[in-house]
Length: 615
Image: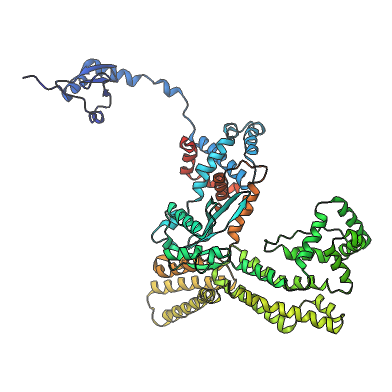
């Protein structure tokens, strides 16, 4: 009978590394040493052994050992140099994004460094044009800025809150999504999760997009502790709102009406009850000088006449939280010159609203209102600045808001409206001064009535207990350790453990007395005690500290967006703006530190070197 032909098997290559499969057929083997083929159709592996034992194959093997390959004369590429070049390119792109430079400027810089530093090997090898810089931002830096998601995706990961807002860029409606979370290792963190465009401003549209974005990042709504947004009906309406739609998916989500907006709206509505519209006075006075240089030159002459140093008036934007008080301060400091200017204009050239105000102010009835509002705003501005602080937690929110209420009540009971207001009231007629005092007193009653509906005082009072617990826990544990050490412990190892724990508690107690950030103190508690021993307590603290105190971080996204996405750079795509904003907000390090961070991360270097980033 006819014998079956034997075929080549790849596993032979592990034993005989000098054989390869023939290009012609599967019954032959190619010898890389002898550079010829031989048949294995009948003997299979025995034919391979027979060829290896041959005299010619042995001679060729000895000749190959003695000969030197041509590639050995070539210098091997310096991996360290390549890594430094890639790290320098990434840092240059990060520098461009961080400092709001254009990509053309970065392209010019990358070409210029080789000329400025001709003796630098790294500078000579840097090549980072506009296209490559944008690609590095989108495909390397932006994904790297989202590495915090690994922590949030864990089953035992921390709770986090979601915050959002809306703003227009021309005819484009932009929505950022911000998360806040706390871990003992990282402390309190605010991160930009996403930044998207959507024309649907309805509650169903916003909530469905939020759920879709969370799902796309593999985050579960069960870990969301609260929802923070502006105090408008589309976000917090009782029937159809974003919060109500989120509640259907997770009934435990807490509503966090932005307290900074609450304070801002309180001042805005309360100041409208004054007989003099101070906000209109500030805006119209600024607008009168904002566009014409001739008017400013005439005003400077008035400053010289009244012997005042010239200072330009400040703009007030009604939507900004903190712009009214600086504008009032500047107007009052230049009041004599500004008033003299408008009075000299006469009723024909002076705007009617300003003429009516400045001519009536001869007896001080107009000037007293900005002074009163100045004193009134100081209480609110101090609270808003505290709310904008990144380290402020929900545990301190009740104290801040209640402190504003208590200060207003105290000033109302003391009839204290500011020293200059009191001095002006004393010089007025009794009837007129009485009416103004009554108006100011009524205004101070309004804030508590306005924000009661928008701010959840009972909920925030509960969160405040986490701040009050800490010194009690430290004190109780110190007492327990002292008693245990004196009356129970006789073993040297246990006594040493007690002394170590006491030293740690003393350090925590000193930190508390210094009024360090609450999140940092809790982090130190878990680091000293071990997070594994307090799993449930860690979850509880994570839930409370993840609750934001304002929407200021989300509002900051629009400020950064405005700095990058200007009218000059009108060809920006939303996706590129998103990636740049993520890089800017999620990396909390200087350009110098970023270079050392990238140089020590081999995965980032590899991703930047790979051609896959252009896909």
